[in-house]
Image (cartoon, rainbow, N blue to C red):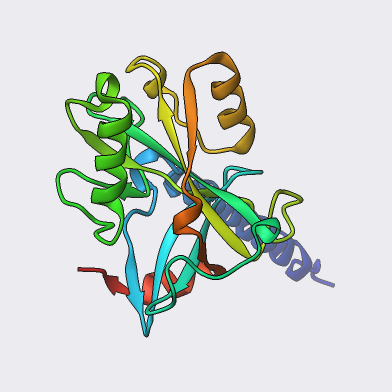
Length: 212
């Protein structure tokens, strides 16, 4: 009787496939780029009658997206008790932080509030922002993050007290608190601009067209 070679061939075949699979997975892992500052989503987009923009979850530093309806009262009518801070760290010209979720240069990509934020920073802290503003970020506690999440949001500027301090990229509430405690930044709440927004999936942002 001839020896049964089929099981041996099958075993070798399976082993080859496993090795091939490991190689493919390894190559795919190498090919996946890591997330860097240059890949931070930036700018406001319009989806239907809402404006959608990127924010950092101030508890985790992860990127989220929020939607604000157009044509609503500004500021919204809300009880101050039902409000939470929406931080806007502002970065002066020369800062090394890299990309921000709203950029003022080379092109303004948050036109409904970017120039106002930059102008306020230059007016309040001219020694830091007198040479211009490169952009700002948005920080808020998302639902389920165990942070200060509420119905209404109070825009709160985070202004650096020196150009050297502005090289730190603040993306969490803890970092903001630490910078303020050290004297590297100040908070400027703007309750007269309180607004409503809701967290939406990233797919909604990717469907939008840039706000002009």
